[in-house]
Image 1 (cartoon, rainbow, N blue to C red):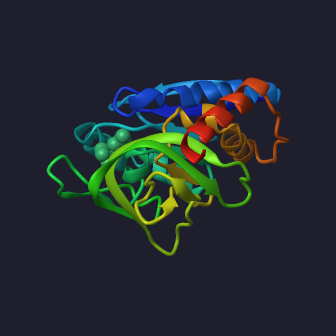
Image 2: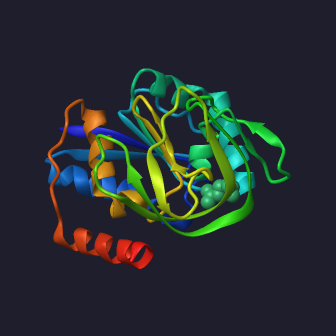
Length: 232
Ligand code: GLN
């Protein structure tokens, strides 16, 4: 079967290798016998509304504001999320799914209102490894690294993705946010290469059935090395 993945504004939202998330999705999908068609969408292109999975990465403050303004004007990503499409959004992409986030001058800037989150500034920029224990149905400790100045506050209609074990995450001991089939996270890595269970969860949502976890020894080894570095 084929699955359409939309990479949303990869030139604006693709810092720290987050473009690798699309490659990781393609790889994990193949393990499960699914072929992925990737559509790269840049500002000015209409965002397709009927795809099964949307991926947004991190970005600098000004790129983040430009991306949020273009996506608000387009409207398709919000409609796709509301009909149950799967969305993964990292860092700047995560923040702009919320109600507001700080722009380059720290002014509150409207987001898309897809996630019930609000972002303002941390007292000190968060830079370094991030490890967090996820909520069900995920069971494997999430590993990645973070580099952001935003503190993200969850409202009642969003659930934390995980509880921080090392690093900062949202800034209050929680990491990321999820509602329906939408996941926002501060994890770079790229996070789907370092957390294949998260990739499989998104793919399962996109195709409408749970996927059995397929272990790959080299990924398990990479995860163990990274987690040992931060957790001892
Ligand atoms: N500009 C945002 C912040 O600093 C997001 C940064 C990022 O995507 N790495 O909080």
